Image (cartoon, rainbow, N blue to C red; front, top):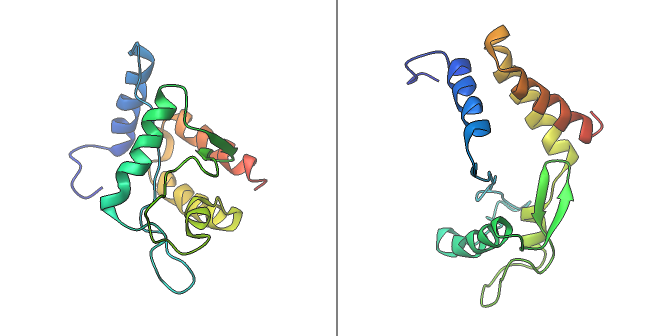
Length: 139
């Protein structure tokens, strides 16, 4: 926000207006490479292995890439990410992909506070997406 030359709500409005005009709008994927376990260890082995996730993303774009539906969208299904040759702790990938209601409750509350600063200029589509996500979590 400090480095933006104009109101971010206007920026959001601009980019939301672009999608409907595109013949093939880009797919959007969210990742968190920095999730940690209870002992503070990173769950994903690091940037050098991100190509494994990118491979799944490309498969999804082309109609493959097995996935499981969650309140935030689709996540890789068990076995959809090739982890052969990785030395990952048992359960680490499952934990990295977990969609935790309590974590999202907190994240949605923080997002709501962030969005509130834009007042009436915030695009209604963003507010709706925020409410819809909270509803899918039963919040």
